[in-house]
Length: 180
Image (cartoon, rainbow, N blue to C red; front, side):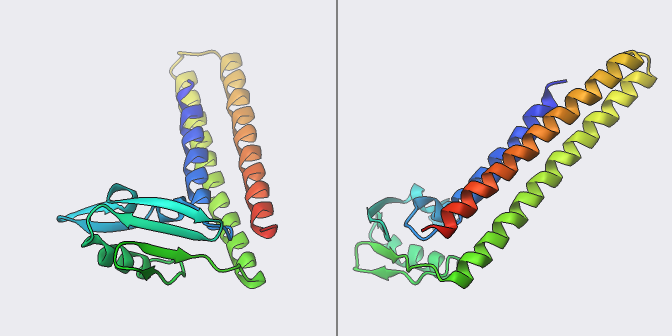
């Protein structure tokens, strides 16, 4: 019955990935993770067609392996919700990250809480499914009433642990966002 813990962990991992893509004022290559460019008819992530480097705290430099990709990368960034206008020198696309305004920080903090709530809902759904599974096993006579109660307690403890982990992640990311 450990597979429910794996499912809960996947919700945590997905949230961690979401949080990594939220820019907290300094240049972070993970903000590009969700962007795709057309590479010979195949949507490919930017890291798959270019080298991404961080020359300083507020700059990302994207150097495609093929010079003709510069325009496609620039277009993908412009069409994204990054809110950054790319510059290009013919060989590379340069992203300069401006200082975050107080208003933008508050917006991002709300977004962080919204994403966290989605992860909590996913964990609660896993808990519900696991509890239903246990009840079915009990009705079928596969496990005793005491075993059912023990399993339900175990599932609740795991749920509480994962929810607390999400709260901690929100606290860390919000603090990072507000202190940049």
